[in-house]
Length: 333
Ligand code: TXA
Ligand code: MG
Image 1 (cartoon, helix red, strand yellow):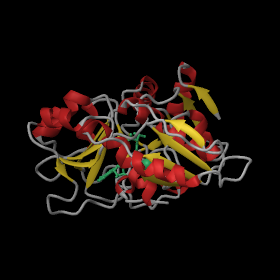
Image 2 (cartoon, rainbow, N blue to C red):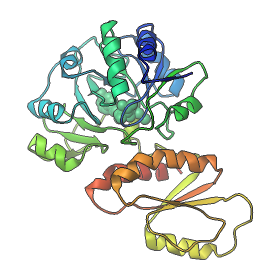
Image 3 (cartoon, rainbow, N blue to C red):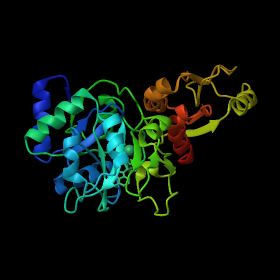
Image 4 (cartoon, helix red, strand yellow):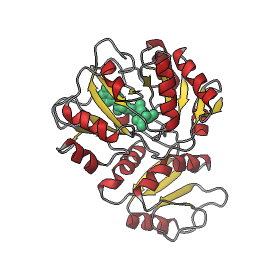
């Protein structure tokens, strides 16, 4: 059931649902989350069951503000504190040492916890209303079945779960890909997942480079957002540069059957193509491309194509988040 996230009654109802241990489809500025009270292990177990996600994959705990951090984290290194002050509320998740005994199920049993303070006004309203009912933090993975494309509208969420799920409609997500994740438990910042926050901006705030994943000895914990194959549409996705894409299109000639298109192309450069190819232009701007990426992959799936050929994003850090999601979608094909 979808309710208007702007309505104070709907927000109150959502907060009460969290308090009661129910699940909630929650809009954030990155993607929609499937939310539950992070302090209620039975409610958190329902998230894992609904998503079909292994219960040792840790979830992000969403908090209303910096004041809630000490309830979950046992220590905050100075660079992490600076990151929070610079980018919260916003699309940044920090992995911090977990206070023993709190959010154990949400953290997948790991000694750390992922914390994020979302900027979306509906998410903020729900977190504050839930807090007033005694819910300190809200565990929320992306509201999709395990391994699939994250949802960026309320309708996407509804299509992933049973009709009974309460979903707040907060409009289409402005960032469109999941938060940047920085591990702050290893003495220096480690970038686990590129996302809505630019690497250069984060490094400027930290005053040191973000280390690549797995660079500081300790292996990254099992984490689905960092699996090779993830974020996949139903269609098989292939990444090609513009030259390879042009060659592939030329080779198709007029071999394609008439009727509904079997191949979609999602590309920044206009290229000559057979009429039976479903052509989807990709924005030239990385921010705009991120915003529409998942919705576009879902829409192409809905058109029933079996193949999606995607022009590889250009080099440059601005495209890191989009490139990462596309590479994983291609790895799943
Ligand atoms: O933008 C987002 O982050 C969205 C919205 C809903 O906030 N959430 C999201 O959650 O993307 P999810 O579960 O799909 O991805 C969260 C990822 C995990 O897969 C894992 O990679 C990482 O966060 N994570 C969470 N807690 C962690 C921990 N304690 N240690 C390492 N990684 C962790
Ligand atoms: Mg996810």
